[in-house]
Image 1: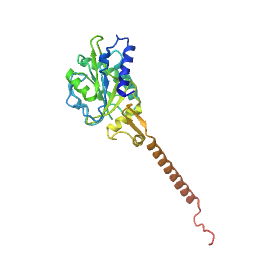
Image 2: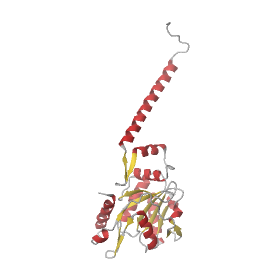
Image 3: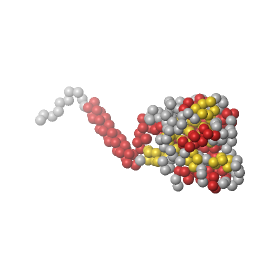
Image 4: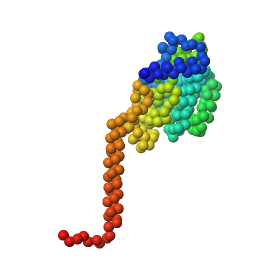
Length: 272
């Protein structure tokens, strides 16, 4: 199952669980999340933040990477699952929203208002539980043309169903570089903290993270077909072998030093 099909399957399952009317299959066939890796998103896109101020996407980029989510705030089921899953993952990370990275949440419903965005922000900043999130997690609303330009740039295909009053959309989050390029996609409604962390580190060009993280990136590689990081066996074996050799050398050096210290000063060896 490819990533787009998997994402669409989540739409169907969760919407049915929400008790909605039957979905329009023709509309559903037009829904998906296509990977536009390395594509540049338009930084001049204009939105309103949760306080009603006019902002551009570029205002939240430039210094650090960001996670991007496209949802809508009155979504009956799936969007809540996406934001809940994201929050669970963020709470595990040692990185802080607003310090090492930002989160940009954009409503795909042009009828939604900054007051709805503010209520949603208050809810999730409280759930996340770190003070820095208030300045680093942005909840935006905007005009239809601006939303569509952003969605097209990131490969987010959605449709409005007039019969149900729902927006049909895929589930996933995206990682942006500080320059606004698409670095990684993670699908579904649960996002492994390890994957999110490695994605942010790579998007930052290793400007955040530790030496251990750099070692992990040698062992794990992003797989676009699954939207996850997988173990690279050969790299892992090489690193494990190198660590084993280094440990053995260190042990030998340590034993030699101990032997020299234990040997009495002035000891004369046997005559030749």
